[in-house]
Length: 333
Image (cartoon, rainbow, N blue to C red; front, side):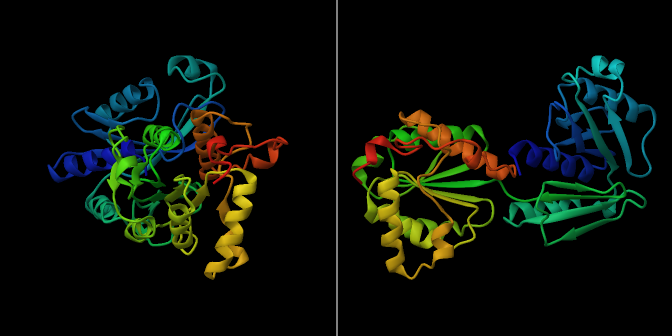
């Protein structure tokens, strides 16, 4: 989950532990242009304090005012933006509307338990009955962040998405910058001292382990991304061999189409079957005709973001006859 939602849960748990009344609002449906996605959270304390966000501010103010005058006894569904007047009043984008489930927290809400499991690195789903307010915690995580059928709200929770980048360099720095902006926890694997010395970007954990050891230490799961960008087969392939045996969501390698074809042939020598090798995105990124390091990084992060959101754009963009979203500096790698 993103850090905004995580901080919202932490604050809600803290208020609840202090004995304060708390309502948790979850965006469950959006239409048109909506300021926040499904799954966005807002915690509303009984004294008017807020944590999180579901809009630009007007909806938050309305919810706070509403709950000060009439505190809920059980979960309730509310919708904003149904009429043109509401759209103007709550400053929703043109044609936008959203529905939220308001959940008054109580001892059986299991929010502290949910937070503890998230911070242990677990993936779980929290299911709320609107009729009773009862909560179940499930190990199985739905394919989407939120599933709402009108009577039950099932929301997926888990740690932040993680990205492991193999190899320091200009492209890796742009990848890390984009990833940090998108709230990934970013780790750089760089055993080469001279390359590490050139790394100046803050906010990135750096490991000197060999890439295969870095992958093993990461323990990749369905919220993990591994990108090989060292331009050195001895390092990139080490990471990919272990990554392709893992549950990582996205495994990519930078390079030209010729480099990628040669890489796949090498990987077949290491007991990787066709299905495993087919998981490799190489050349990584959407075929945007990218040439410069920031363009290549943008193409990779755009592809990754589309896939996370359940949209594959690769087929919609014709791959140019030249080098696609490959690193032009690595065509001989």
